[in-house]
Amino acid sequence: MTANRDQTPPASDGPTGPDRTTTPSHQGPAPAPDPTPTRRATHTAHTTHTHIAGIPIPDSKLAQEATELIRDTTDELIYHHSRRVYLFGARHGRERDLPFDAELLYVGALFHDLGLTERFRASHQRFELDGADEARRFLTAHGVPADRARLAWEAIALHTTPEIPHHMAPEIALVTTGVELDVLGIGYDALPPETRDEILTAHPRPDFKRRILRAFHQGITHRPETTFGNVKADVLARFDPDYTRPNFVRIIESSPWPE
Image 1 (cartoon, rainbow, N blue to C red):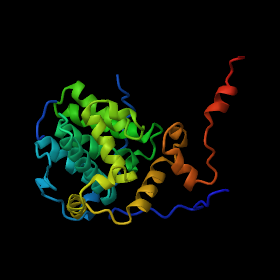
Image 2: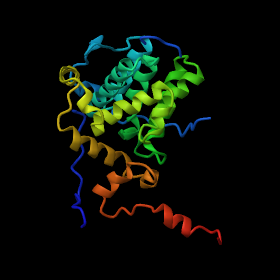
Image 3: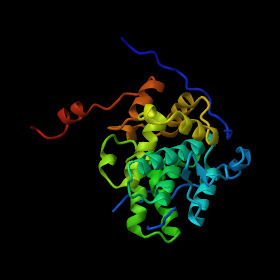
Image 4: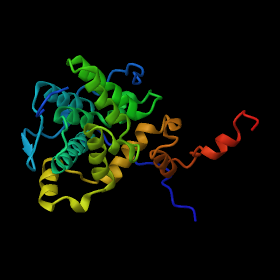
């Protein structure tokens, strides 16, 4: 049976929507300037919480500037999602007594979906790499050593790759944990309702499932080749009726090797 598909994706939403610092990957092309420099003016008031659901929010100068950058260059959907990713990831790390750098985790969470935004509509590398490259540039510009900045790069670059991040450094694993909980619901039943409610009060998710799928589609539809072998191919298969998913077996069988 052929699943029903939306022939025309909904129109785009407008701009409405460390605690301790200890701090050869792909550099990618320099991004184009953000076409929406005044986006933050349309945001709801920025939360000034120092803790949400008992989870400390990094408030170093670096963390504050990361927050402002993301609020300037994303909409409400991506901003609130990214903050929830940090909160869910940090809570998971604290529950398991993992020795993570909260500041690096915070930057990894904030930047993880930056590649989906308008400033990267001309990019033809994976959107994960766009966000990873920007996070590394941001961290190194703030004096974070290269080996620490690389952790944030890897956390973002791998956040759509199942299983592997969970066997890596805590900062990498916890970004993926936060993404999996907020987007896929993995670990939902283990989250106390009062914790969930407090996080959602600070960072609500109205119509999130439909809106995040639309954001994924808008961020990758111009670069379908980058979804080969990762979960985002499912987004194009759902929303683009003309999309043909590359087949790994056929690629092998049609390679120029005689045998």
